[in-house]
Amino acid sequence: MNKTEVINLQDKSRHIRRLIINEIGKLGVGHVGGSLSIVEALVVLYYKQMNINPANPKMEGRDRFILSKGHAGPALYAVLADRGYFDVSELDTLNIPETNLPSHCDMLKTPGIDMTAGSLGQGISCAVGIAKASKIKRDNAYIYTMVGDGECQEGQVWEAAMAAAQFKLNNLIGFVDNNGLQIDGTTEEIICLGPLADKWSSFGWSVQCIDGHDVEAIDNAILEAKKVQDKPSMIILNTVKGKGVPFIEAMGSANHSMPVSEEDRVRALAELK
Image 1 (cartoon, rainbow, N blue to C red):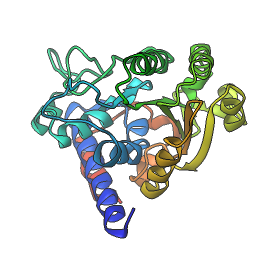
Image 2: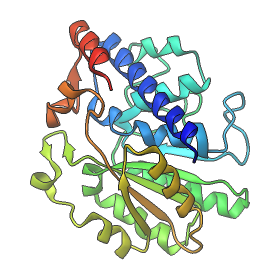
Image 3: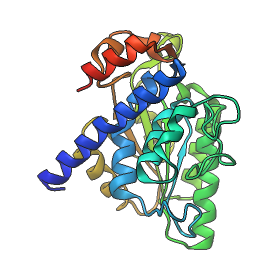
Image 4: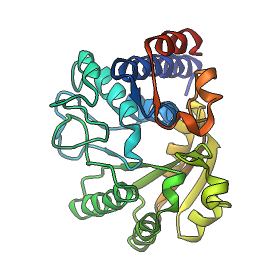
């Protein structure tokens, strides 16, 4: 990736964060922290790596992204709107009655959503099934999924991990949003996950650990994952919950789902790095 590409993706990440803040600010409450922490990964995927066509969301053979940590839907909606799957003005309808943008992603409502998410652990399980189907169809698609670190406390995640390794799904590339926080506190004090990389490796996955806010590192990790021949890949993203807005970062786990007043919205946009 050249310097211009890096700068463009960094600028796009800041733009997406502004969309997220405005989107949740319009509603007045939402999952801010975990939406802001996955922005760079989504930007690299949707603006550089994925084979997709916003004008044809159901294109055969397309790459797919499944947001297993479904509460971060506002981040994915912001990216999809910016990429042209639907009008950016629809972001103002987040989670209001009859919206096409519910709090957790719904494939029956939103163009560009490849799998409904909500119950933690189910998204990655669906991603395994989709990756297996892609292998059967031989459509050469890559299937990407994002799980939360707190979500990795769910047993279903590890059932999916075993199945993916058993089927040698090298077309499946996962990410863990490893921000160390969940709704009730730190992952260490709730159910400690460490050593997370060793866990995924022991389940038969190729594993990389990187800075989850470094667009170049994310891009390189995806390229390396695509070279793996006989197993799925997991990229552990070391991230900051609420990334980009200092006063939200400082809230810790309290930013998981939080009220966003008009004053908060204006302050967040002013502080956004």
